[in-house]
Amino acid sequence: MKQWHISYLTGESAASVISSWEKLGDQLFQYIADPAVWTGFILILVKVTFILLGARIIIKLANKALEHVMVERERNPLNLDRRRTKTIGKLLGNITSYVVNFIMILMVLNQFGIRLEPLLAGAGVVGLAIGFGAQSLVKDVITGFFIIFEDQFAVGDVIQTGTYKGTVEEIGLRITRVRSWTGEVHIIPNGTITQVTNFSVNNSIAVVDVSIPADMNIDNAIQVLKDTVMKNYENNVNMVKEPEVLGVQTLSASEIIIRTTVECKPNSQLQISRELNAEVKKALDKYRLEVASSRGE
Image 1 (cartoon, rainbow, N blue to C red):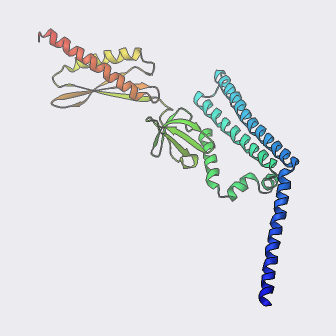
Image 2 (tube, rainbow, N blue to C red; image 1 turned 90 degrees about the vertical axis):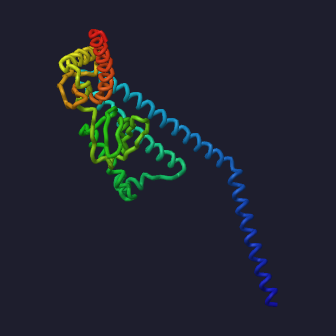
Image 3 (cartoon, rainbow, N blue to C red; image 1 turned 45 degrees about the vertical axis):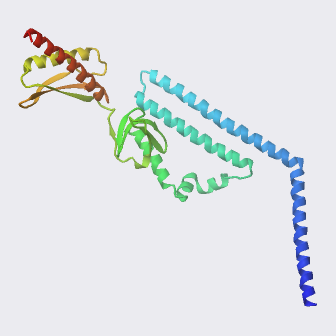
């Protein structure tokens, strides 16, 4: 009798579970088969699609408008430094993108019945960010602001910060992109930039050391150098001032080193040094041939 009672209860429980699943299945089928549900779902997808497309269009139009404004700003007689204008333009573009994308996310979530406005209104955006442990993000943004405000460096400048050296491609709200001369792109959080060396602010100095044999006439060699570097100066737009042949730098039993310096535009000293080295080598070779020819060698 007791065993029969247990079996009866077990069968009754199984029947109850099966009945519950059948009811749930019927409700789910009715929900899926309801045309109003599909109509609402399709309407939400259409709205979300328009929101996404609208955000992309707004960002593109805003970037075009900012680009036009910056071009006009450069043409203005009272314009900002070109490098700083370019930097501010990129930063404003980043800010526009962040704001539009943030609003877009709120609108998309709202379509699915998720409302974040009360949460943001109660906690505040800044308080919410700090509450989620985003102090580093706040530090990056503040540091980025002071980098631009103090004009520490700008887009197009060649800088070195820590072990990274290269050309600044972008200064954003949170990060700075630096491209090295070998092509690598370094993405550096602004908050980690504590010391910067900027190679693009002031004019640089190109140094050319020329080695000549110890038995060569020094005065003639110096004159050849002067004629060569002056000729190059007349045709080189990167040279700011006339080159200066300083004279004998070092002296040994086998060779004499003559040093030449020239002030040039920022970050062009290596190129000018290479060009002068090549031209001086050609001039000295020609001079040696002329000397040898005059001696009948």
